[in-house]
Amino acid sequence: MEWLIGAAGATLVAGAAYWKGSLSASGTAAAVLMGTIYYGAGDVFWFGTLLLFFITSTLLSRYGKKRKMDLEKSYAKTGRRDAGQVLANGGIGMMLCLLHAWHPSEVWVLLFIGVMATVTADTWATELGSLSRSAPRSILSGKVLTTGESGGVSWLGSLAATAGSLLIGVSGWLLGVVAGMDISAMSYIWAGLAGGLVGAFADSFLGATLQVMYRCGVCGKSVEVSRHCDKPTQRLRGYGWMSNDAVNLISSLLGGAAAYGAAMLWLMA
Image (cartoon, rainbow, N blue to C red):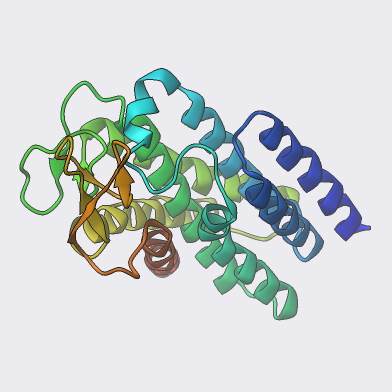
């Protein structure tokens, strides 16, 4: 029955997102599969946390859409998420859900909080930070960058990342209570905050150093795509395998580890 409920709920949410243009066909299929596993192998804690990330991220991607249209041309991924982006954001969490079903442990739960806090913080920082009136600065050198350029951080984006991290920590605790978990509120809040901020800033650091980037020969912008302004771009820096999805996966792992460490430090204090 849990698997049927998960499939029905995931199909309903993913179908609505596809109809609204937030998911591509492949993204919809991946979201249905993922949502089914999150509820079938997990419970309301796992599925609810995923749903909270997906709904808030979708809403924020549509906020200020007109101002973001030009920026999206520079991103490897746009507001219409495909299967790769869906799995990059929720794939690690799905594996942790399956591991918890196989061998229940609070380790998987805390790692999950960190992973979901990372993807939420990073998405919130991107969607709201791109609307900042002040230009972002390089996380490495502090020099002014163009809005949307990888490796850039802003005060608005950082505040958004903090808010997203706290949302996952607090909601994770509340959903855990509903699911019948015996958990410490502050350990989850610290896990969400530490995981989200470490993951989000790791994403910016990797974006400024290892992520593959290209230069548009027409407008001169540094972009994530191999074609811009209807012309092929030239590779500027980074490793070919370090795509935006790879950066998200690595950042999520780092965020999960930070969340577990923060929760353990709190419990030992």
